[in-house]
Image (tube, rainbow over all chains, first blue to last red; front, side, top):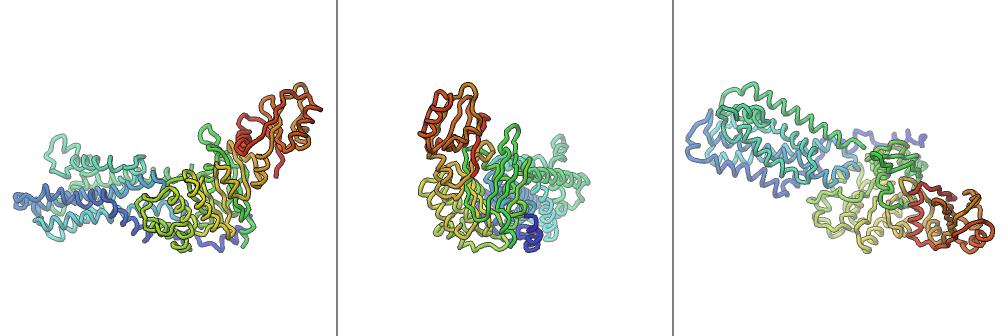
Length: 265
Length: 310
């Protein structure tokens, strides 16, 4: 009834104060982190594989002895693997929207006061926390295994990698909304490995066609920037351009698919 | 409170098409607070589409949706309407309690999680992972989630699909026990017995329209009757004339054949034979299923159906 509407509005909480409108959802964040830790696949991929790869490829005694910028080659490989780990963690964090759409969870959430944007913010926060955890493990393992790098430079590397990996959280979201697959990481895992190779994350680029192509990979700019504090030379302007352009592309793509997903048909 | 005077659900001239298919085709429905209404119809009748529009998950092409005098979005955000969806909607890797606690965190003043789980008959499996729960248990969990905001209106979309008989009974017992407090319940189903057993009122839908609306007894009445059908040569009586014959409850035309639903087939038969030029007269009894099929397929061939409203 139209007469009753004003009275009702007065007795109801304003839209902004509903529990689902708050940007930070402590219970949801806690639950999501618990889910990640419970998921064996995500733990192996993000917390065990990157330090494992580092131990496999980065700890030869020759690498420990050989210097690379302000540290040794072991530190160089540790930083690269830490970055790879956080890329995996943030991408899979973002891409988890795919599984949740397939399971109908997003539809269930739309029956609550939770705002769709808050859902995405929660996903990104969790992805970033997991990315940081992934890097922490690799760096700790590296520290124990002979990586040499000044603490300040190490912290700078980690912070740059971490902030930059938000580009990949957006990538994961975009792909999670785009790909209908129940397990989108089976596609994105190999894709990231290829991108890491092609972007020069696993081995330095020595010029030639590969190096030229590498400059356009979404992993290239971030790898350059992340290693900046270690190698000691300022990254090229193209590294910045690369990160910004890919960041805009992925964020715009995620926003586009997100809008489509929440638009009512 | 003023909202008591607003209908719980008010649908007016609802139309929704998907491409060339009109899923909902001019549907009107008003449900008063406290009613338990079955939305009965075959698959593809437009039940789920209607429920989606009631929940604000889909937007009608035409017509209006009001829930408790407000929009579906507002009603959802305030927890005044809640729903148990047909499938999905649960994270398989969370436990029953974690799921309820999570959803409760989105509700302004949620009912205690333990209380709702008990209501839904989930005692003893609170710590079970959702993926390990049976279909019936998952459905009771969805029901528990819907109870968290203590909604005034509860929508259930085919809630017992895939459950065995005992699971179905347990589920309805849980709903009944909780609905005693005057909650409005609207449930979609294609089980006639379910509608008959649990609803005060049955709204029969077919091809996106309401084709019959009445108490369970009324619908059962239609179902227990017979159909006298005949072909009229020459001047066929009009629908109004036929509806005025003694005992005629519903007039239906299928091509040249006219079907008269009645509880007095003997009387009606004599009149038809004696006073009209009818030929090929048939008198058939109508079981529950046939009544259901007759009513829900009446619109199928674009035939005219006349009936007295309740």
